[in-house]
Image 1 (tube, rainbow, N blue to C red):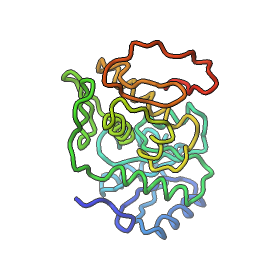
Image 2: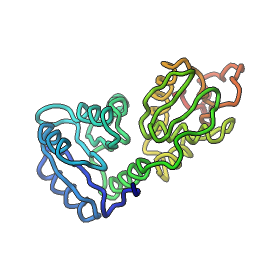
Image 3: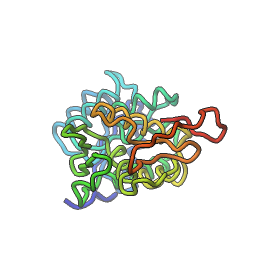
Length: 249
């Protein structure tokens, strides 16, 4: 299967506000995407059963439920990536979106150019990978094609963002990567969307690794970034009160 391109990628847009929906529908079609627009969860589910899509873009507040429920349904039953758009912009709201499996979370109001760039980045990450895995690091094996991480015979399903983070960290074990670097290499952003963006993804990834017994594999180098050390670190972390230290994700 060839990598989706803007001229062929099919997007399911779920937005109940007519004015917003019309603008987004027209803008995405002008950008070369094939767009189906649904105004409710019921209509979106009907379209998902009838057609295959390369991307789901959904609002959160819909007349018959939450777009996060739809996000969870899609990401747990298919490989279709999801972008959540919402006017809710607290850290708790964004974390809820990522916990539901969203590949990205875009806060309203946003510039159409920003949304297009986010879509391009998500589709690029969702493109089929040539390799199924990477070399073992600290007992971890990353299965890129299936989106799973394996540790001591157990596996956990990952989002595309989590796969991307591990590809960077496991690809250069022992090297520390800043949040800005991860943001650029994993999501294609030239600057961080917000100060806690990478931290939220790393925190969720750490929780998944912990369920496999791989606690502490991703280490925080305070004031610098994140790393997977080739051997566990026995050094205690510096005090969290250091002014240049990022809070641990």
